[in-house]
Length: 300
Image (tube, rainbow, N blue to C red; front, side, top):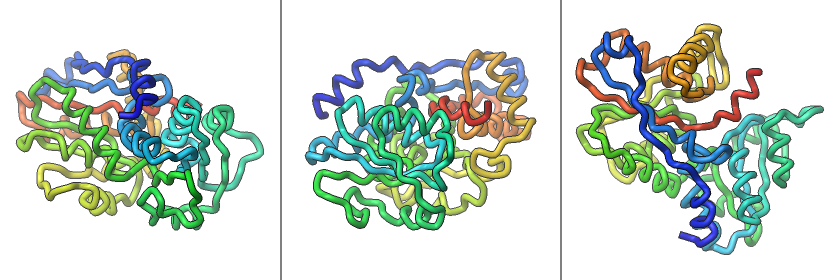
């Protein structure tokens, strides 16, 4: 590991495993634990750090001085990349979906404050950027520049996510995570013991493509996983009053903060599946809190 990354990681807090006390769970006969990756760091928390860690190590080892990536106007990935770029003394360029707004939202303002160059691209051009997966695949990329695909979804990202799984010393039956690009779920699938079931909860509508994308990231075929497509609440970053009420109640009951784009949807879906009897009594379930709490500012 590059010395600068070792020093940065020393500033992180621990990602603890917390059992959720809830009479509803007792009624369903299951245990729910949350892997609190949101506690790692105020900005580069959760799967943002897990996915970036070994990509950054490769970038630094390759002599890169500029990191280029893509994301939406409230992208947790670009937000984390801007911060870590400044921390490592690297230039960052963010290709942001959509037109430049008259006033930058808090996420974009943070990114600009941390030195990221913001380049706004049309939605059609943004879609075309998704085809470039390798770190040198972006057309026109220059010497010393390093390309990260959307969400950092490349093979090296899985290595950091696998460390998350190996930190869990408790035996368990099911592990869940929200899905954007599917890279986090792929890393979990690679690392879990074979009898464990893995469930991803898609954060966006019409996400049938995720299955193929995840399979492409895996080093070997696996049958112990699925992506649930039923809890997107209308699409990416779309919410309903019911979802927001669930999040408020969960936070009040557990003191665990959630955001409505990823982790909130996963936990809503998880509770709904429990109510339907989809888990056997006695099963222990672990839900991964993927951080991204800065995204809540888009719903204030």
